[in-house]
Length: 41
Image (cartoon, one colour):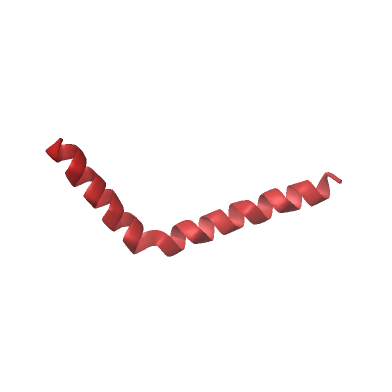
């Protein structure tokens, strides 16, 4: 249980440091999906 809690805390810290990168990647993925949808019409 201690190991899971420590790894969760480490993952939370990693996401706190890199939340802008995750947001950037999600935005690009959403834009690509929207472009593919519009292109298929």
